[in-house]
Each structure stands twice: as structure tokens, then as C-alpha cells.
Length: 269
Ligand SMILES: NC(=O)c1ccc[n+]([C@@H]2O[C@H](COP(=O)([O-])OP(=O)(O)OC[C@H]3O[C@@H](n4cnc5c(N)ncnc54)[C@H](O)[C@@H]3O)[C@@H](O)[C@H]2O)c1
Image (tube, rainbow, N blue to C red; front, side, top):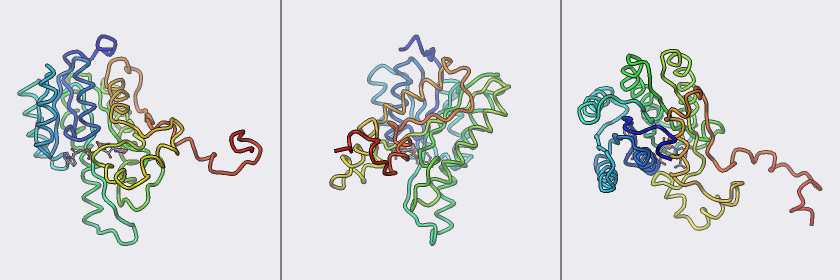
């Protein structure tokens, strides 16, 4: 896989690199020979993830960074450049999920989620993307969500931010494509990570979720990381402005909800 992807020695930045999906993305990129900076506001998680990669002989550095704060992102960019060189790939992955009903969500909470899950993606795209534009080459991959395709109720600004990320990516593809920088999205389905772990602790949830996914299982961080590595790589040179669903087919189940007597042999008995 290493040679096929053509990511050897590329400098890649992964935001949220200390979390479930971010760690897997960083691991796949380093396995492909890339140098990776793991940015996370949780410095301990990022350090632990980078240390684990280092132990396997990978070139990985942890950088403490709050993606919602432009000064923090600028400082992180300087650190990445000092340790590894200018970024050639940015994976916008850091995110938060918080409950909240629209009828009474607090505006400060709404703004907090948008500032990380949407504005933070623009801040990082600008900071790491401008040097890519100046050099005439690079790739940005954003992690959105199936919640950007279908409303996920009672999650405050989460779905709104995620559909915003999808349009942000397409706008970047349009504006930056002619200058050699591609922008694409991966939309994960239900992936078991620290973000979603509390759901799976409830009895029966893991089995119930697996049962409604056509692929027959809940997703793993590696499922997302593999798609990201392809989009980040020169192998995806002609892929720009695309949203890739990695959800085991979950978004395809809508018509299966409608009773159609006689059409499904499994339900014919
Ligand atoms: N887990 C799922 O089922 C799922 C589904 C769809 C989309 N996603 C998306 O995938 C991405 C990764 O999520 P995950 O499941 O790995 O969650 P996670 O909670 O394991 O990891 C998220 C990481 O982002 C970091 N982070 C949060 N706010 C930050 C900030 N302001 N600055 C820097 N870092 C910050 C956290 O510290 C954490 O390490 C998120 O964008 C999430 O919305 C996850």
C-alpha cells in the first residue's frame, strides 16, 4: 500500500489527532510513509498517540492546539513547520458532539459547537492551506458526518455544522482547485470512538446499531482512515469537491422502511 498511495515523506496535519478517528488517520498516514503532526486541544491524548506511533518507528509529533482559536492554530502551524516542514496535507477532523434541543438550546452552546465543528475547519484550512496555494499543491480532507446528509435531532448545532463543512469543502475545491489544492469530505456513519462510546455502554445499543447497517456492523476508525488516506494521496488527484460516505450503507436504508408486501423474500413468510 505504501508505494501505491505515494504519501512517502509528505507532511500531514491531523486535527483531533488524539481522538478515536484522528489516531487511526495518523496511523494509516504514517504507515504510508508520511510525517504526521497530531493537533489536539487535549495535549495528553495527542502526546500519547504520537508516542505510540514513534514507538513503531513513525515520524509523528504532537502539538497542543485549539482549532477554534486562530492564534493557537497559527502557533501550531509554526511548530509543525519547525519540526516537519510545511504541511502538504491537512485533515480537518477535530470535533465535538453535544446534546441540545433546538427549542431551547443556549446560543452560547450553539456558537461553541459551530466555532469548533465549522469555523475551526475554515481557520485550519486558511492557516495550512495558504502555504499550499503559494506552492501550488496540496490536499485537504474534512471529516463531516452522515448527520450532514440527514438531520440528527437533539444534537444542537452538530448537523448544521456538518452540512456547512460539506459546502465549505466544495467552495474550497472550486476556489483552490485551479491553484493545485484539492478539497474533499469523508462522511463517517456510526463509528465506535470515545465520542460515541457512551451510547455503546447502554445495553443492546451495539447490536441494535449493527442490525440497521446493511454491512452488518458498526464502523471502526480504520474504516474512515483508509478513505482519508486515499483522498489525501496523489492517487485521488482528479477527485475534488467530493463527499465520500463511509457508513456501511446506512444512508441507503430509507426505502427499506416502507412496507412493500411481496417484494422482500426474507419477509415473505
Ligand atoms: N464517532 C462517530 O460515530 C462519528 C460519526 C460521524 C462523524 N464523526 C466525526 O469524526 C471526527 C472525529 O470524531 P471521533 O469520533 O474520533 O471523536 P473523539 O472525541 O474521539 O475525537 C475528537 C478529538 O477532537 C479533539 N477536539 C475537540 N475540540 C477541539 C478543538 N477545539 N481543538 C482541537 N481539538 C479538539 C478532542 O480533544 C478529541 O481528541 C469528528 O469531527 C466527528 O464529528 C464521528
